[in-house]
Length: 386
Image 1 (tube, rainbow, N blue to C red):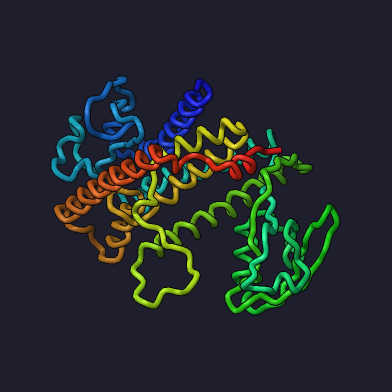
Image 2 (cartoon, helix red, strand yellow):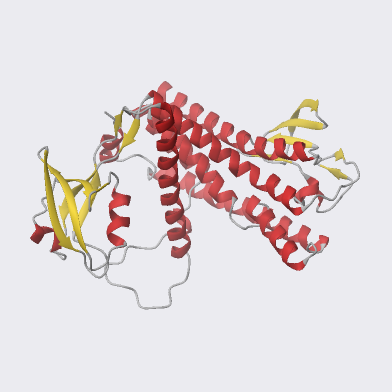
């Protein structure tokens, strides 16, 4: 019980740090250009709060609902000036200055930039301290409906270490590589009982060969590289994993898009609103992962940081991407969107985000009570790093 409580506390602390890192990006760049920053708040901007004092013409606050954060930057055109341009969150404002689009854009994108920089630095620290996590893909079974791999000589239990001489480790790399080479000859580099085996096969028109994939328990390998090479490898690893996150997000969006065509036989079920989860699920899963292997905390934090960056770049009002979208429209039109219309869009964008938070909170509570968020035994074995 103590370990679980410690894991939950650690996850909450990590999420808080990532949010503060994001908001520090906005705050520092805004201060650099001379924007007003009347309030820096840790927590969602409603309900009771504790004031920590004023510094640099900014009041620092901690709100009751801690899982969030914001910096009021009224000259950026956020929700703070939607209804009253003379004050923001009860703090009086100075007369507004007009800032060029490029400065406002840099302020808007600074939060996600800081999240990416933080994730990169943490990746470097992980590589130098515990090593690089390798999740080796292997053939867990062969699909009887697609005999390509079986006829080529693939056996269940084979590790997939290369495709056309290109090293691979994760199942996502294997799926992406084969999926991009439909009806194409591919050489699989396998490791069978410790011995290398190369097999040539031609993928199906859908880029499949009939292999059911799994991943071995995570193995942390020390890098035999100098400091400069580690910096490059960390950047490459972060880019690869971020690309996979974007692909998964695109797949999620596609799942929510109505499909008017006939359903393909054997197609996996699409995600629905009940599959959306939030902070409670992240804390629960993260705490369990840390209990199994504390080293997983590194990659977990890195991925959450990049997830915050990606989500915030979506072109939705009240998100950083929404600000950038407004600026793009302003650049095209040669003038900003009317203040009233802009304020209404930001307000409803913010309210929709609150509604989404309530929805995922209900999903999280339901999943916690039903045990859906409990890590399965096979996943526990995979997380037990070597």
